[in-house]
Image (cartoon, rainbow, N blue to C red; front, side, top):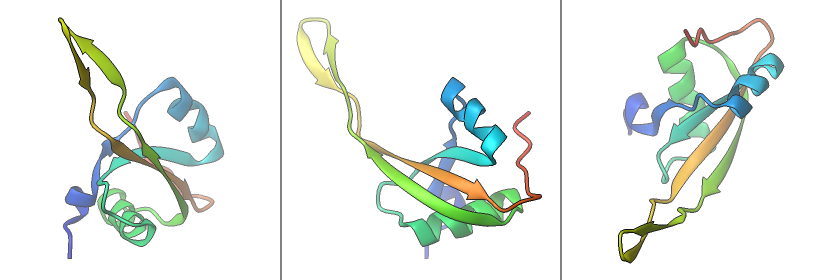
Length: 92
């Protein structure tokens, strides 16, 4: 079994993520091989909240120019976790 901190690598703090917090939704950067059940348990363990649902998106890496060659950023996975009513994560 995976450790909770191996599944959830961090919270994504962007303008879009801040707007979603009003809807009780939070964005997380998660391991590519983790599933929704593992993500839900990991968020509940780390932040001591109750999650209602989890949606995941596999983000493809972008092509970047590195000096004279073309490089690529890594693929990564994003999870949108909706918390149950009355639960909140303190982001400060």
